[in-house]
Length: 204
Image (cartoon, rainbow, N blue to C red; front, side, top):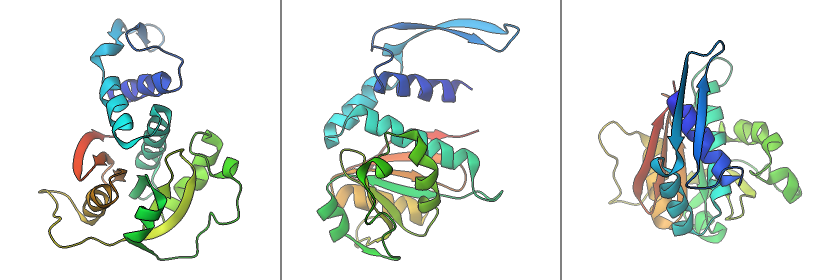
């Protein structure tokens, strides 16, 4: 619950509904099981803001991307756990280091139907994310490609316990100097920037 609360607060900050530095009163359950106060400066909001700034995207794009990742990690597909990869960054470089596995499902659709900022689009993104390969977004959060196979060069390796999806995410974040989000089938979400894992959360 605390992890989900943490991410919801980050999302609210990204959407401008809460300002950094404010305190939030949290009431758990009904009837009341607990009440506590949270200072937003104690959260990872500043870390998220710094990461977004580092790769040149708006904080809201990052928080909405994490919201989509949580949706996929917690829901799965047809009762089975699944994973996904998102990469947000310069499209020419992302495409340079990947190949298409399927025809691009986003081709010909207007930007409103491809914006990660609109929650109504998240179910569509989730369906495409479950295809083999990665989903690419530009820095404004507009989806451009799905089903992209990331070409991992020699010299980029995984950490202990990581799989091929993590390796691909780490590689593309380094090659394209972008932000990549890996959702593992175990429900762990890992955020990579420039080849390094910078944030990790396990969905319950």
